[in-house]
Length: 470
Ligand code: SF4
Ligand code: SF4
Image 1 (spheres, rainbow, N blue to C red):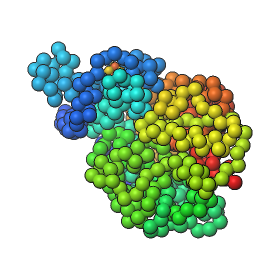
Image 2: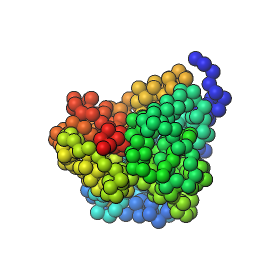
Image 3: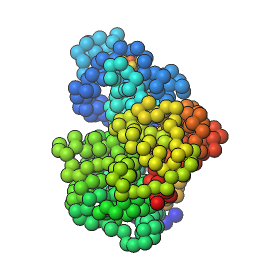
Image 4: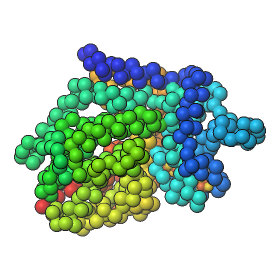
């Protein structure tokens, strides 16, 4: 294998040092608990203090059918044990009598990491809870950071995080090649040079490396949609991160904030009025809702998804579609729909694109999660082998050993059960094409359809609409 570029080798080395699937380093665990508790604000206090254990949230969870121990409250309770022990007087005094305890052995960390990777942060439990308790936020916002800092984080995720934060992913020759190829095809699709890095544009297309890697046809489709709409637009000449801020998925809040601030600086220099995203997963959530909190002010641009852009353009008569008869449906990505309220626009846009559009039995805020979010969807040996090939390393460099390998296999087995409800829902709709807007949802639904023998095509909304431009 060719020698790695020094920045890539350094990022891999840095990632490797963070990961420990065997040991229990008391100092690291204590520091991780301290960091976790520093995030507990008034909202988290409500989540941690006011659950009555009614289990109304349980049936909503995609991982509850895997095992009762993966119910929302069961998973979140592990965070409460630590919170009570470390942050409440009674917990300190009465300890185990109040279920107030903290991890003390390697097997405790093993159990906690299992809980973290049985939650997609889909928000379905939040919607179901009569007290508005967001167990997903407790699990992914608090517990994930603790277990990752303590060393129990998948090496692949640590590598993604280090490559993004350091910018080293752009030194990987295969990734550069993917980016250049996609940009060339996008330029060919509109028959002119791409308007890279144009200052003061009305719309800037947000393209990450993951966008170019996982759905190049969506990037090309979005370029065609922007061009066809006749708006003043631009796009970055270099990717805006790998899939930013990927640190958020493993609960590394300071690193996620660092990446977001750097991104905002890059984008702000070009002064776009609006930023158009393709990714309806956590990237949308962070850019739309968390960026203002990170910056302490509103960004100088509006953040919207390509489906919101297309809806606006259709209403203004700037975009015209050839209406077909496709039996097509829309899968609501949890972060775009349940957590951000973008539910009407995709329906209206797809109705304009096809008379055969039909809703899924569970849709909008009530949509069923695909089971792949929160890092679960990319935890497979196939993904590790694919990434190893791209980065130019042996797959053994992206997994620490047998214990982590077994954890990944068990996570895949759990996902295979969690995705079934989604596939059943799609089957009931009779749709032959599922349109959505998140790389993980696409990957998860494609995998689930293969597993359960459902013959469907899964497409990104930008690619689907671009095929129907009038
Ligand atoms: S999180 Fe809400 S719905 Fe779930 S058990 Fe607690 S109080 Fe009940
Ligand atoms: S956020 Fe979703 S996956 Fe996580 S506990 Fe709640 S319902 Fe389950």
